[in-house]
Length: 360
View 1 (cartoon, one colour):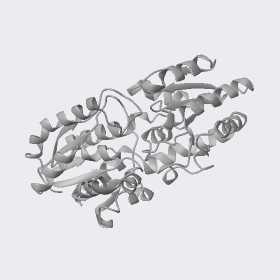
View 2 (cartoon, rainbow, N blue to C red):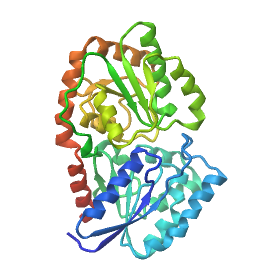
View 3 (cartoon, rainbow, N blue to C red):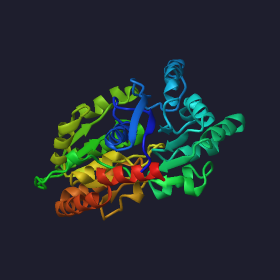
């Protein structure tokens, strides 16, 4: 192992909680307890949560420009680890960090938490496309969440520079308690954004109630400010669905062990490999999600649960109706997913593989 590696982590940290901010929090903790490494950070979390990621505003531009006051931290670091956004602005806002690190010959690592970076690059034109490529090619090493997501970095880096690092769920979520499979008990645990499928889910739950199909559901996560009124109205029209806000720690653990089915009907354009799905595997849930982005690399239809069609209320309704009438299927997938998680997505696996990539 190389000694005295000083890592500068640049990216969002909680709060608010997202897959990327949670992953960065864990990466920071891994480095803090790993021999031969020390870590400093630049927290790029914007306190105002909105679905309009990648959009430009003067307020947002000023917030990210002010982060350059931390440029001095590059000088005392030899590894610069960045988890950027997957838009033109998401890359360009780190320009000064990327250029200074490259000029000083620091090791530059980009960790892409999604499947939109490559599409964004292809859609750009002219000077913006050239600038985007110029900046991303400055990185000496890239990390993606699964094999099928490597194409996000192939326009910029050689194949041997691109590493796969599967996501994880934290160990505290593991529990030996028996689950209740007497009724369909659903949980949605993610940001409440249109592209995460929340509107379609709430409409499908209304249809379950109209058809007298028994279920209980709990919804947790930050609500996109632009959707708050719509979501609150739909929640108020549901008898057996409860919105419980943002959950942390033991509250999250209790929620995931209360449920027997986790649902995330996402079509989010920047989706990669949602940590919330791995948390649901760790807590012995049957998975209902979409064959979107890197999800099919970790979840298979009928093996871990069920896939539903994107942006499709009927598909969600039909699948939940089936599960409600086939709770033995739910129990079978629950038991399988517990073992599947421990063999593939434990925090120990993530920690070991992450350090191996740093040392490569």
